[in-house]
Image (cartoon, rainbow, N blue to C red; front, top):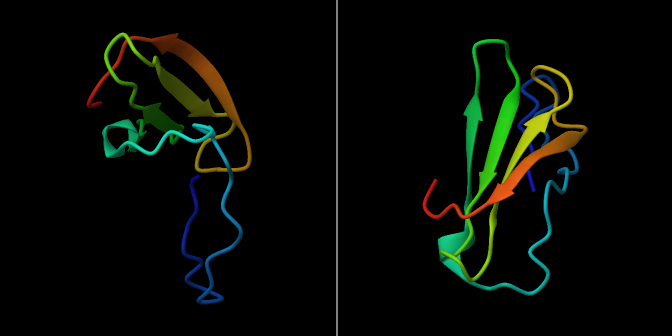
Length: 79
């Protein structure tokens, strides 16, 4: 999931689910984030070697967490 802190309201709105690992309970699978020069938010969901693939997602709009598109699924550990 991804969320943000709204400085105007002092609240954290409901987060957006980017990808659900459906029962995987392995901290090696934790995602990492990056914001590129155009403001798109990238989510790199780690996999576990060849056992589970990793995923790359990009926000549909710059600086917006409402929707993400899957860019790739591949062997990716520790992004």
